[in-house]
Length: 201
Image (cartoon, rainbow, N blue to C red; front, side, top):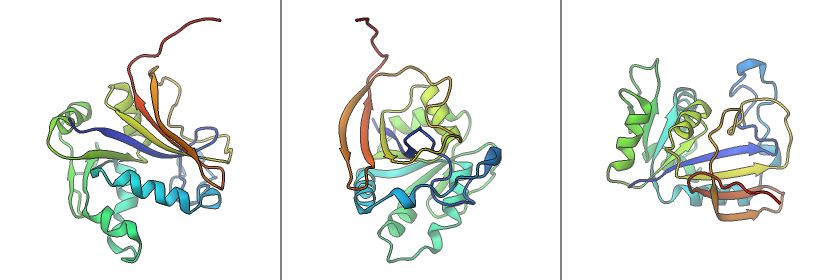
């Protein structure tokens, strides 16, 4: 069984919107795009590279797919991520796209949750969900996320799309590894483990 792993950059207050640049995603008037680079460091990059090693595919929503497809095919070949991003298979969930042209990309057909269940049951390595906030919400609601790999950066934005938005399904998490970089970014890996327990003091 393949694992579906949500890999996401977060602010300390849980915002995941537009970490990469001011124009990445201005939905709902978001004006704080590009918050990640000033609070990142080499340890973050090394951790992310390691998170991609066991994966042979990405699962992307339309918006993230279009951002990546406009950048990675012509990205600097000296960037250690360029070859990896182009070579991995990209599964794209979209209600509007009719074709995907970035190499090794294919559109999911039919119901997204059913399509992802079929992917999980197929042969292959891990499947990383990168960005793709709306898609991540769908996967969480359907119990399809096996693991979270989060970089939690020392900055508060105050508004924007959050990974764990209102209505998130209560879920117990088992820590796999939690470390902190020299710049104060928390590198956290959690495995889902069913419903949370409740008790009182």
